[in-house]
Image (cartoon, rainbow, N blue to C red; front, side, top):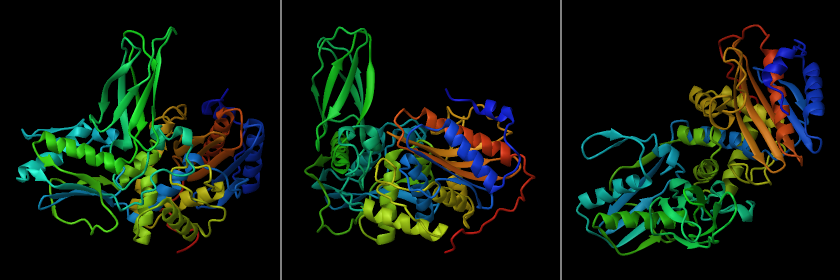
Length: 502
């Protein structure tokens, strides 16, 4: 059973000294007494000046799970710039329309649609948009331009390569929404949301979002006798054909989300449907080919933008995998001037991290979200990178990165953790991560005396669930609050030094 941070802090058993030897010894005791019985746990803590004050297995490369997003998002802010925005445009030329993709993972993101303002025909600004409403912005603009026929609708997704599914991702989970494909044109998190209702045969699809006929369903449900009914969906490989199984009892309902195949092609089909509903004939829909010229033409309708700050927040606070993967590929495109890929994006991040923190021994970026089990990073490198971001020469980088992290007891993946820390005692900002046998937490503890303490705790190889790994994370944070919270106030002038130099 996890001890609360309040009880750990109240125990008062931790000395005031923050000497590296004493602190490392205490961390080692925490790992030995509270950590998983199998595998390895690494802990790294730095002080406000970036000095490494505690390190247990800190130089050992480990699987980081979603902690990797700290590297991806920080690199995106530094490579693309904190004021960068993804832009998706619709261009018209004669009877041809081109969707010019920018790799935006936020286009049609259901959570972002809740916040996105739209002025309707009566001039009223409203939020809570549907994905169809976004498509209709373009469809109506095409109709109002006087275009009645589209000879071909071309989806130009060439900002990224067309390796949309990482080879390391679990094959049996590719239909899950957290394994959504990554493309140069993404929409609605590259997933279909499905609501189901009971039927005489067991269950049936009630409605879907986005509302489209571009996908199909095979009903394999059957009547059941269990006390509680349940249904689930799977997807055919490389096709948008979904199979419904299980059953629902009377008055019961269910919903789920399923990833889609070939998101750019599906987006083209969705837009074509909305154009036809506006009375615009669409003869053909296709993806841009290697011999097609760069996208050109007059803009039709609005350019749809998603600020980088929003994408970084979704990646870190909500641990949204698609957003992190799109960032990695967009970094690769920006640095190499070619189609963004996991390879060129990962290489660009590794190079940047090494330059900023004075080396990146053991770092291996297989993907951008941490879903791959071939990612490796050390805890010491993570805390060095976090400190360097917090003190970036561009204050906007530090600001956007800090605000993108989940806040303990309040937001995102940490909203149910660290609830017993009084706001006047400390604020815990961090990125958690979990895949089978891997659990981690990386971030910064902000203290009222002005100290900002970067930390990283990563466990690999445990077999008895993540509870013990999380207990170590809780105890390390408690120790940081107790030790560093007793220090004299820190100067208000931030340290803008670079650990490794440029």
